[in-house]
Amino acid sequence: MLRKILGLTTTVLMAAPLALAGGSAQAQSYGNAPYGNAGNADYGNGGAAGNGADYGNPPPAYEVRPSSRFYFEGSLGILSPTDVSHDTTFTSRAGLTTYGHDKTTYDIGPSLTVGLGYRLMGGLRLGAELGYGHFSTSTLHPRTNTGTATMLNGSGVSTLSGGDNNLVTMTVAAYYDLPISQTVKPYLGIGGGWYHLDAGALYFADSSGANLFSQSGVNSDNGMFLGEIGVSVAIDSRWSVVPSYRYEHLFTSSGPAMDLNLFKVGARYNF
Image (cartoon, helix red, strand yellow):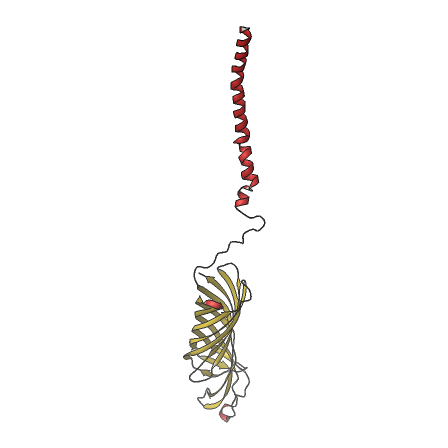
């Protein structure tokens, strides 16, 4: 009897630690194990995806905006002066002077402009610009009824040599960008300023190549008016390509005024 009691006691004492260890292992595996909490963290709440990015509504694209309202713009173009007609005085090779009417035509030439602008509110901009242009005198069409200059009958007299014209301009203008698109923006502009024109001496010849008469060079400084139409095409948030057309009117204190057509393509950088 005593032996049975001791045997039962020994069995109970040996089974108790195993039972306790088994209960603890079950609690660690399912109560605090990664499967219990990880399931709630990663799949119950969607993990990082549930609290972070929204896969149904992705965030908008990242956009860099200029930190300043200032911009720089430069352009290359073609300068095309219109014909100029005016009354004038002619001097022949023999030194004889006669009065008549003259029409002058010009060849096209290159143009360069650089400028700095400032963006206001509501699509308005202000710009200051320095420009340079070069063009040549092509032909004259003098006309007179005076007997001392019968060769001046209105036919074209071509340039024998000289006739280079250098134009420097300093202008300010106001522009308005039409609110049509963020990428493509047509615009209108109007302004004015000052110009300096250096016209070189000319030697003219008739169809046979004979030297008919000469015209001395002159320098002119006066005011000017401009009107411009164009479009800016954004490449990114900083750079834009700007093709445009500009009309320029050069005032004079004596002699005829001159009108210029400027076709240019520019590049604009937003600071």
